[in-house]
Amino acid sequence: MKKSIIRVADLRQQVYENLKDRITRGEFPMDHKFQEISLAEELGVSRTPVREALALLVRDRILVQAVRGFRFPEFGPEEIVEITEIRLRLEPYAMRCAVEAMSPEKRAALAGTIRAEIAKHGDSDAWVSAHRRIRAALFSALRNKRLIESIAHYEDTIHFMRINTLQDARWRVQSVDGSAKLADAIEAGDAEAAEAAQAALLGLARDSFLAWSAENAEPA
Image 1: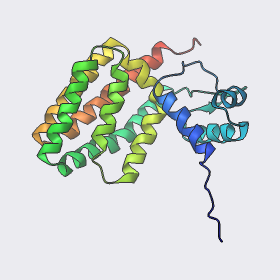
Image 2 (image 1 turned 120 degrees about the vertical axis):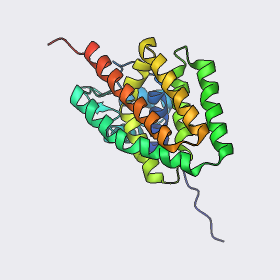
Image 3 (image 1 turned 90 degrees about the horizontal axis):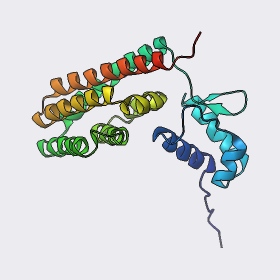
Image 4 (image 1 turned 90 degrees about the vertical axis):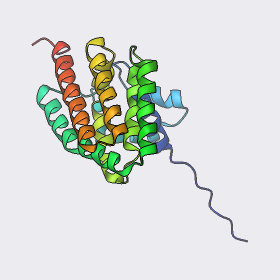
């Protein structure tokens, strides 16, 4: 009698997804050091899957290797502008495609989701999490998986700047206003207006990241 192979879940991938989710939710402070031993003890696994997961996070530019352990990367103005330039080529186009692909019922539902998040979380730090949920809902209508992956990659890369800027009322109020305009365009089925609204949100993100980066730059 043949015995079937019992497949064990990939611990490396589990650790990677655990850390990535916690990082993008803002669980760790900016100066946090990620170390193999402490993470292995916390997660109840050996150091090998932790080491491999950390290497994947470095590959994705979510972390960088430090003298002892790993830390968040530091982006200068030029890198922020370059990343935004790429996102401006991807996301407005993706938004146009999403609006064109959705039925009027789905557009109304998505617009309602955005407005509900704004009403509930638009005036607090909880907007950071609400913003993530909105973006997930916005791009869920896309059929191009590679486009979704590319958008997610650059979103994850600058997650910590988003967390810090969206917790600042100066930038949060503009993000909320831009999201409301995007909801209106989606519900109206106006793909061009939705594309423009997404581009405006990315321009706001770039400006807020540059301002945050300048305010938090190490003294020369």
